[in-house]
Amino acid sequence: MKAKILPLITSLTLITLFTISSCSDDDGGPTLSIVGTWVLIQNIESNCDDPADNFNETLTCNANDCITLIFRSDNTFQTIEIEDGDTFTISGSYSINGNNLTFSGVDFGVPVNLTLSFTLEQDRLITVDENDPDLGCTFTSVFERQ
View 1 (cartoon, helix red, strand yellow):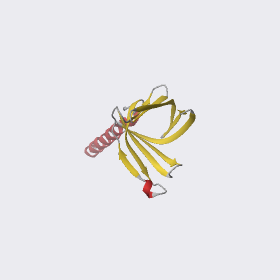
View 2 (cartoon, helix red, strand yellow):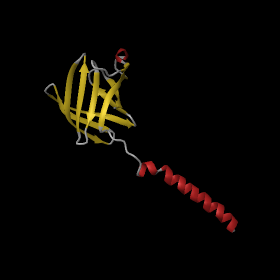
View 3 (tube, one colour):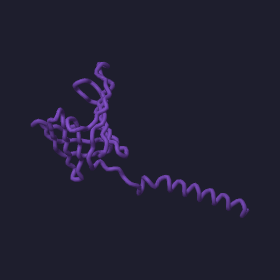
View 4 (tube, one colour):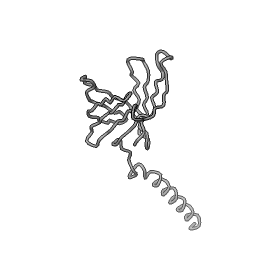
């Protein structure tokens, strides 16, 4: 009887250790933070009402063209867009609720409130706007952490 119980206890111990170690990321592992500086590297418009409006572009950041998004720990953000050497900025606040990211700010004097779904993966921030009213498209932006 003792010979049958020992392998059973060993197996149960190994299963328990494996289960506990596989859950460790959920309980105390590092959590990803949106706080930091992000540069836009890809824009995708898909599922457009007019398929001719679909596109996928890869972007590079340089002195003449770059879009940077900065999230601060006090729940403020700043977007810096350099287009053909001209710089435009938008500042405001942001909030996160589950996988929804809401921006509140002012763009060219007009109040803007925008909610996007988002995914945070290591050094990638992916935002999705499924309600683009202008083109009837799903608009996806991919940012890279700097």
